[in-house]
Length: 327
Figure 1 (cartoon, rainbow, N blue to C red):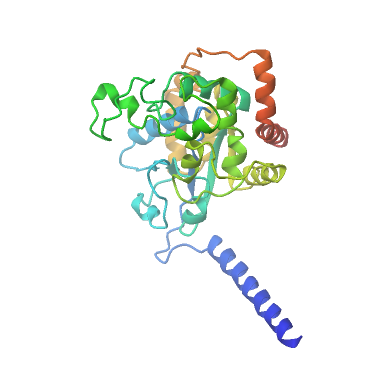
Figure 2 (cartoon, rainbow, N blue to C red):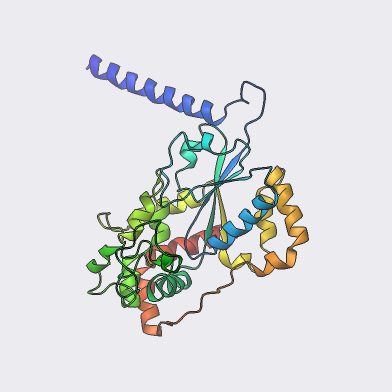
């Protein structure tokens, strides 16, 4: 019995030591040269939420100030996010664009870190995604049959003619066949909904610390992962409601919501540049919010919408709860 209690005591001491070690790192003093640690934001790209527009706006500000190196670009489909990623960014970079949710657990070892995430009403987003990714085979036709997308399957990556760029990764998401006898663009709306169901909950119920992991899961229809549960919704709600999470709503970008975005960077050099850019291009940014430039060729019926709501019930619950709590 005594040895058992000693083992428990040792374990408790290790946990206490771990807690204080983590807390010390999160509240680390300035670097040895006396310079304060510059906070960094990780913008987590969520498709079809105006995230591409958001990135273009950030990029335009960064391009207008080439000497500042405000942004650090990370490709979530290709680059592996490792502890040495931060040194590859300029030390003055204030925003890491395109990294995974979970990146702050790595970047925070060097600097205070928080997330920026855009969310859109789930059914509205699903309809847009189906039209863009599946029906029209956009985004390099990765969800489409190469033959039906009019792609040459012999194209080698990085060497394809400019006219065939859209086909660079056609047929990547072959696991669609688990849900449908055909791939996009002929897959039905409801089969697509089942294939990519509850993405918000999937994305934020766990940490994806290596870039590519979430998107690989997404391309495969989350093959091999357990079904989403109410516990996952609770975990995602906790993550998206955490103090280090800055939530933005797609519909609020319309009509001047960029001022709220600029306020996130208040007091930093990037924030000053953002405010200056807003002053110069206020009308342009106001119209550059959530503008659905991609025409929808498919509109679901009321019955299909009802079924889609049942399929996406966890994301709808999560989204509605977050909107209520963030009012």
